[in-house]
Image 1 (cartoon, rainbow, N blue to C red):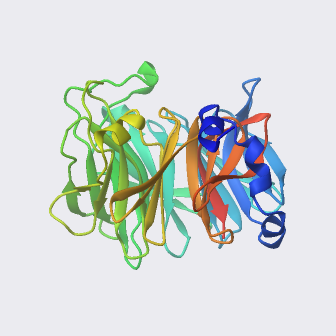
Image 2 (cartoon, rainbow, N blue to C red; image 1 turned 135 degrees about the vertical axis):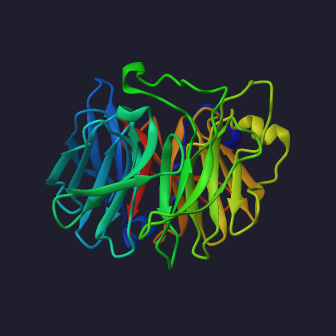
Length: 358
């Protein structure tokens, strides 16, 4: 069968032989992701050396995970509207600390570390006061003691990251109002106002905000390149008959710059970008709804591949390629002209995001 036909079936297991065994042995990497099994149980996982190294039970689905090299920990954040944050030892899987969100707040599934890895900034919903977005500040050296919070500059803050060489935090405010009593229902689709927001973490001052070209393009996931260029992905909440760019870049311009592709390529993503990863001038985006991976350079589409239920994405510097994860327990690398199976745990469904220990 041709490679395209294999990918349409969502099975890259048959491609395992294309990944050089010597490369796997010479360049071991440790991958971290939340996951669930077929019995509805949820775990925090570490994978490396071709096997699952540990899976730590957790109360509900996790979302993102950050690697704190200073304290040798992997920090997992609960999926919205979850209220837990758990840090585990990256080497042993030992649970180091578990905290609950502040009263009247819940986590949005993402966080960012200060450059010295001492502070953690978590996106949160202040549902006790109507659902405004806040950024909680936590001390990684003191069992994640909450030090305070500041406004995210919008509703529904999701992924956030520190800009290189500065104290500026860039936040994707999704603009969608949700409240715990309504579970995950979206309450303001007609009036939502998403934004890409820059905030000085020392003063909590908003340095700038930029809106997407359509107010129903919910900005959710982002990454930043070494030169400070932000790539942000959107999830379109408007009419399914409309087609819009779902990826934008920003570096000091007066507007978000849309990535360039044919309408058919955007439609292939099914209005949904799940993860964004930047490395070496390239941007990788995943779409579990579209069952596809797209690779971009200078804002132009370079490659699009089919892969079933793909969501997580990160760059593996040792393998020198992007790695993705999916709902079939597969870890799949994007090679020069093909997908390559890097690992598989068939009893697990990897959750939306992953991180790779450097």
